[in-house]
Image (cartoon, rainbow, N blue to C red; front, top):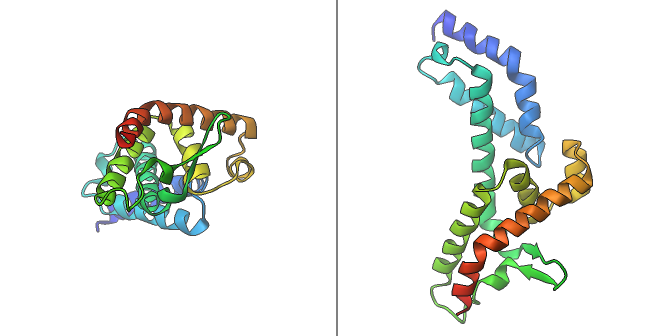
Length: 183
């Protein structure tokens, strides 16, 4: 590594290190996850062929961090989805596992689960980041609204509202799949 390149990396670390870590930490559940993701971002940055060619280092770092956070959630979602609930407006709770046929009903259960997961992830990707984040934290990571509020500094009512919008969107997007699976 050239002296100039090492200098650029050290400068970026000094200038953006704390803010980047704070950004990542506010979006993941544990300190260890934040440390791992931060390390991955800096590793990717340090392995760039031409660090000097990046015009906005700050924007690049935060975009990579967002992508790494999303990747981290995707890895965890697959294992946790079966036991998570969608709240209903008053008719009771819909469990994600209730949307999928039981194992004795359909031999291709794994294929159906994978189709559902893909549709769910695609619908989640369409949401604004703040709605997506609240839904993931609450439904997939089982985080309370108080925990989210403490983590982000957002008002609990704002977080609840964001989740409501996310649930409405997901219901609309997943209804055709639900109807297809039930028929």
